[in-house]
Length: 122
Image (cartoon, rainbow, N blue to C red; front, side, top):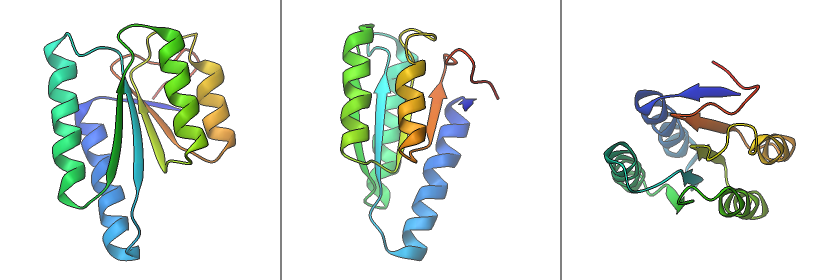
C-alpha cells in the first residue's frame, strides 16, 4: 500500500486514462475524502473531477466528513461496485485497515492521500 500526495494521484489518474485510451475501456475510480472543509481537500476534489472528465473516467467521490463509519460504508460500496481503483484519505489511519485489505483481496488497488493508513507506507 502506498501513500501518495496530489502529484502522485494525478500520475495515477493519468496512467488509468492512458490505459483507457489504449484499451478503450471505461474506468471507474472511487474516492473517499476526509472532509470538504479544508482548502487542500477542496482542491484535491476539484482536480480529480477535472482530470477524470477529460477522458470519461467515471469518478465516484464521497466525503466522509470525518466519520469513520461513513468512510467504511463508502469503501464497501466501491468494492461492491467493483471500481478499478480506490483513492482514500483515511479518517482513522488504523480504522481503515480492514477495508483496505478487503479491497486489495478483491483485486482493487488502493491509494491513500494525505494521511497514511497504518501499516501501509511508501
